[in-house]
Length: 122
Image 1 (tube, rainbow, N blue to C red):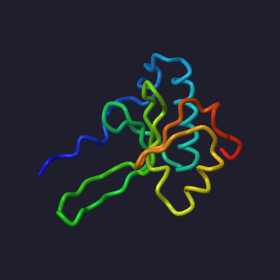
Image 2: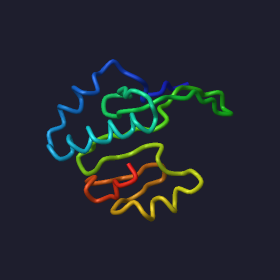
Image 3: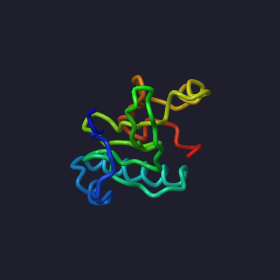
C-alpha cells in the first residue's frame, strides 16, 4: 500500500514563510498562520514541503489504508493561497457567500489576496 506523501516534517514554519519570494504572499501567509493558530488553539507545523497545517486527526478507510492529516491548513502557492479543510461542512456555502473574492475546488479554497476577502470576523 502506498504511503502518504503529506505528513508532518521538521521544516521550520517561520523559515518556510520567510522564504516566500512574493512579499504580499509572504505577508498574507503570516497573517493566515496567526489566524489559524487563534482559531484552532494549535501551533503550526509543516506537512510535506509546502503546507502549513494545524492540529491533526487519524483516519482509516474501508480499504484499510490509514494515516494522519492536518485538520486545517494552507499553502502560499504562486497563483493563490490555498486553504485546506475550510469548506465542505454544513453551513459552508452561506459563509463562502459572504467571504468576498475567492474560488473553490472540490476540497480547497483559493484566495489570491487576503485584501480581497472580508476579514472583519477574523
